[in-house]
Every structure is written in C-alpha cells, then in structure tokens.
Image (cartoon, rainbow, N blue to C red; front, side, top):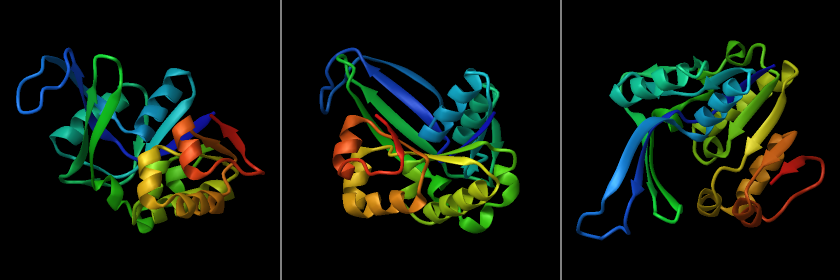
Length: 210
C-alpha cells in the first residue's frame, strides 16, 4: 500500500520547559529539532508501519529545509513537489512541564504550493491521499490540495482529511471550513475532540475517527 500525505514539511524545534516560562527572564529547557509538520509526520509513521510513503508539498533548499528533508527521507519517505531556494517553514513548539504544548508556526513556502505545480505523477500509485487540514486554510495551497484530490480520486485512491487545528478552524470560520471539507467528500475525517466541537460535529456519508 502506498500513502501520499499532502501538506507541510517544516523544521520542528521543540522546546521542553523544565520550569514555568518566566516572561522577560530565563527558563531552563531542553531543545531538540527534526522534521515536522502534520503531513510529514503522517508520512513518517506510515513508513514506520511498513507501507510506502510519499510526502507531497512545497519546501525550500535552505538550511531548515535541508535538515527537514534529510530527516524525513531517513524515515524512508519519498519527497515530491517543487523546491524553492529559500523560505522553508519552521515551527517552534513550547512544551510545558505538565505536557501542554503551544506551537508557534512559520509555514514558509508551504502555503505557496499552486495547483499548476501538481500533476498526476505526484499521486501516481497512491492508494490513499491524506490531506492535512493546514493545507485547506490558505490559498494557493488549498487549490493545490483540491487538484491533488481530484487526480488521486480519478486514479482510484481514497481520501482522508485531518482537521489539523481547532484554532485554525476558528480563524478560518467553522461553517466555511465545514463546507470546504464536505465539498471534498473525503472517505475519512480525522479529528480530536476540540476540532470536532469547533467544526460543529459530524455529518453522514463519511467515516469519522476521533
């Protein structure tokens, strides 16, 4: 089975606070970095579980982009999509001592993926196209996602959508985002409880994994 995952590939910088954040002062922490982004994480786990995995999106050939791409490829993931010279995304994640996580994303060139940069070869052989909800919040990447969905479905693939972020849904507009996802007609929607509540609940005709 081959799964294609469409969305962001970013350099994920994780700051694990060892004490409460002291605004305007210091807070001891442990810091690590590696490939991240919801779509990239899905692809990495697919490869880890033994299936073929392809990540599809726009990235950059700069220091953060190379670190992220090399890290993802090391998991056995094929990378597809256009490469810019600079501007790869970086996400700083603050993890509090109790485990609560706050993300500070700079998505970089990921949101600039255009529909004209997607072709049938990008989804060739894919049995499943997994679309990150982050790719549906902004243009032109939302149009690129729509084209990839059409090409994948025409080739016989099933479609999954992860709702991604309750705050992203709130900012986009819950009813507007609900309409966008329903228009895609995914086979499966993935959500957590906050995303499920923010989008206004489930609808018939689609499997819903909470």
